[in-house]
Length: 345
Image (cartoon, rainbow, N blue to C red; front, side, top):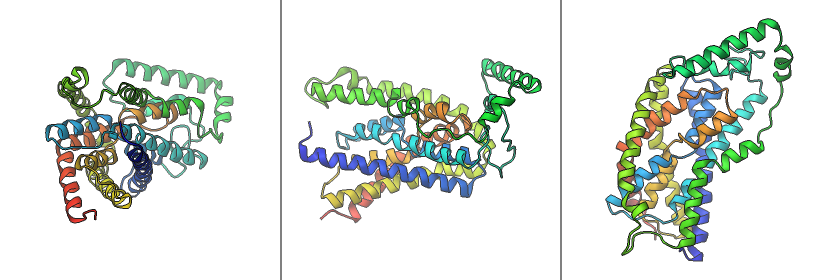
């Protein structure tokens, strides 16, 4: 259990982490708008993904650090849960601004191709990947299209469409707040942390925890295998976004991870609190990774206008794959260089 002085520093570091990921999310939106041809709603959604973090990347990094015997602060799993939230809020904030500026029900702005303020919301599901691999998804898309066409021809949807055009949706709803702060990923992380705090059975000891320690490496391998299969299926969706978007998904983790290391070291120097090397690396991973669990759930509920395939193709197909193969070793070396050339006196 951490002493009270370290609890205060840990809480301050978590606040710094939240602010850093919020800044990264806003920066990601500005970069995507300047360098890619994504629609604004898709750029805002992707920015939300990169303003969050990745539990899979974090778990992989923990495995690397444990294998390399690199120490890290015991409260870093709490950082994982806390730093997942800013990305959700960034995406909701940006999309809310777009809606107030006149975004149509299909997610197009007035200066974007296909803008139609009276488009049917029923057609939003058809904006997804038309080459979906699921027969059920294709059948559902065809049924939705036929239903929408029949309703439009009969005039039954005119009143509904008129009521939706120009209607300002609330930024936050009870359902959305529940999805942001109590989604299954965050809930399980917080519950596990609470169990460990109450039981006091943490870390390695003479009688190691066989469930959470002995089985970790094997389960991590199975998880990475599944993520690799999923990532390979998502890569093809990047064709629609172009090479600048592909380059962003590969280069952005390096930039954001480096920002994370610099921010962590600045906080360490400011508070005269020496961080372990592994703490720098885990914080850089929390800044450099992109969500593919929490934010997609929020997107499905609150941002149906955005493409669900492009953000996942970038975060899971490229950023996750890069981080767990090349990124983590690179971040270790960057952290070592920062600690060496800017020592805490």
